[in-house]
Amino acid sequence: MSGNDENAASQLAGRSRPSNRAPVEWNLLASAFLSSELRTGELRIEHSFWQPATGHRPLTTASDASDKLLSDELWMEEALRSAQRALEAGEVPVGAVVVCQGRVVGRGWNRNLTDCDPTAHAEIVALREAGRTLGNHRLGDCELFATIEPCAMCAGAAVHARVRRLVYGADDPKAGAIHSILQVVNHPGLNHRMEVRGGVLAGRSAEILQEFFRNRR
Image 1 (cartoon, rainbow, N blue to C red):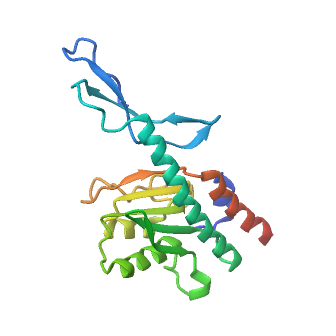
Image 2 (cartoon, one colour):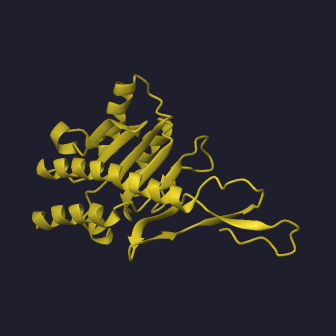
Image 3 (tube, rainbow, N blue to C red):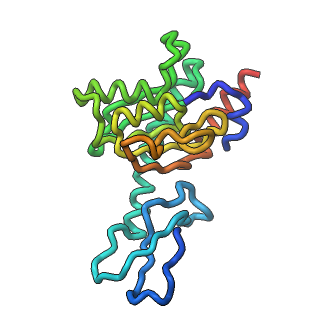
């Protein structure tokens, strides 16, 4: 993730139901793609999908999705702690963690200045540590949590690592490569797909960046 643009920091901050003529009854299945922010204390569904009523229990319930969001926020707190480490070191405050089977296996924060390394973004550092921890360059059972929408380099690294799921905080309108300026993750020309959720603790993720750039003035 590139966070070196002050202007970028200042900017951070269903398909339709089938026809009634269909011979089957349809139930609304609340998908796991929920808003990652709270609106007046309630979860807001961003996307919904329709599924035929088969008598089977839905794969995802509103309760399941709520639990997932709370879990995502807990791991994002860990990423924010890493971002704080970057802030204390005078680096652009971006943090990331890699989670596998309920435990952190990789942790990183921006170290570009510290390591004199243009590739030492938080996500790259976390992915490298996760690979060493698990003894594998493929991280197919892992989730990557980053405080900011990953840049093209970091998004590409997540694809190469075969990360199962990506969760990030604030959008990066200047360098984000999930949807802001281009789409690297889940690009139709690539052969890897991962679940993506953005906006988890987005306000706090943006706030720490804004604090950093305010203090530089």
